[in-house]
Image (cartoon, rainbow, N blue to C red; front, side, top):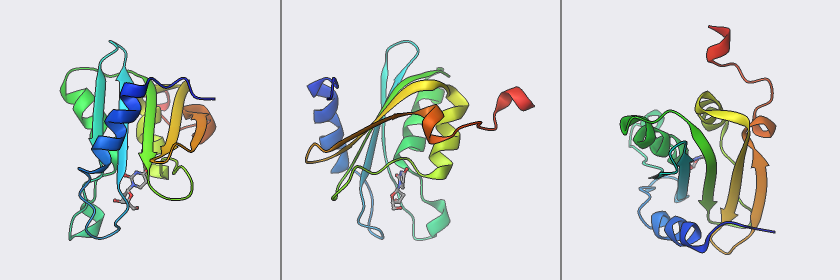
Amino acid sequence: MSQTPEHILEQLRALLANAYVPYSHYPVAAVIRSGSGQLYSGVNVENAAYPMTRCAEQSAVQGMVTAGEQRIDEVWIMTRGKRAGTPCGGCRQVLSEFGEPEVKVHCYTEDGLEFHTTIGELLPDAFGPKYL
Ligand code: THU
């Protein structure tokens, strides 16, 4: 069962329309709640030079760090399609850099299908700053 506030779901649905996805046609929207309680959003931004593509989660993290924050407390992601897409491997690594393993990650489809997990479940034993 979801406890996600409706305004976050509305924000995610609106963000999907802003994703720049001329190549994959697969929009992704992400919202991050930071340590201060502020919400940061992002969408995927693709590029004709394919490896330059930026994932939605990473766009949101970029905004959070740019604003001077470095702690993720909760994550919401929305995709289209039959099942709620989970963060890709690179995004799992990026989320784990700023979020503790118990931080919740909520994945939705536009139609409301849900999958709830945590950063730690997505990337157990993550490599991170503690090793360096
Ligand atoms: N994508 C994301 O934005 N986040 C993910 O975690 C998975 C993949 C994007 C990248 C690309 O624009 C499209 O989804 C298809 O891979």
